[in-house]
Length: 252
Length: 114
Image (cartoon, rainbow over all chains, first blue to last red; front, side):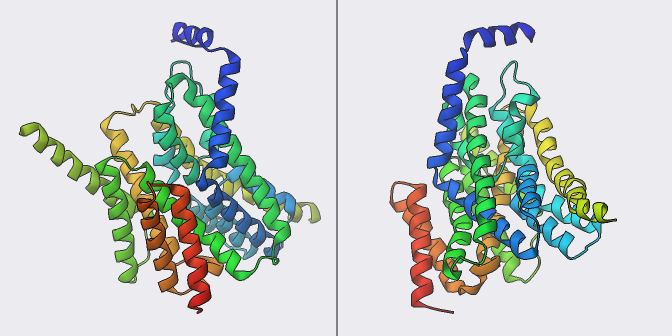
């Protein structure tokens, strides 16, 4: 392992690593998916302002959590004096979806000599936009450059998220309603086309279709969404279908 | 008491915000370290994450947050479908899909208010 590390560090000059870091940052900034965190963090900042939180707390929440759904639940929980356990459970339920995302992200960054400290920042910044861009771009990069590139993606999205939080805090109330609605709509539409764009295999396309269908079905039935279960059922069904297809292809 | 009450939101942020949020990312990191990107568990996990994300998308369109809820269901669904077809027709360009979707939403909201 240590030999591998040495070879790796000798073969990679520092400046080329910086180059891939900057390329990652640029890739995130020109991606249409960057609009999503702008809208979400601005929304969080505006809500924090209206709820009466200080700018210091608001910015710190974005930096330390970097997950707007959880941040909003925490904030409303604190402001309504909810029980601590209730808040923790609500926050943790919104964060479960990060586990499979981070696992697949880490899998793409596997390389001899890669330590936790090298990947911790992208892991902390793992949100849907980052995950979709990483999944789309990392497989085409040489393995030894992926960590630097992904840190670049993360640095860009982190900076965007914090700036948007502060901007939203001070712009609260000044946004026309239709503008605010359009900003919120960017999230589902960019996640939809972003997922469709990064779903190149049958299993991913099926998982997307099943997830949409199941969620719409439970909504029509009036039952409450359990996002985690929809994900597990849709993903497992898609995986099962793809496996039987492949077996048939092998058999013939 | 004044000190404690001003510190309280920060303590809550760490205890019931950062901790329950970051735990899943750390867990994902532990799993992903020993996961080959061409292995079967990777394919399954990616499918689960994709299915979960699809559910989030549907939820945001069907029961949306904040100001988006003030627009009619027809406008929200229409803009989603038009944006998606825009993406498919214009050489699978994500930026085209997003712009067409948002433009449809704004025009729809102005033409069909409420």
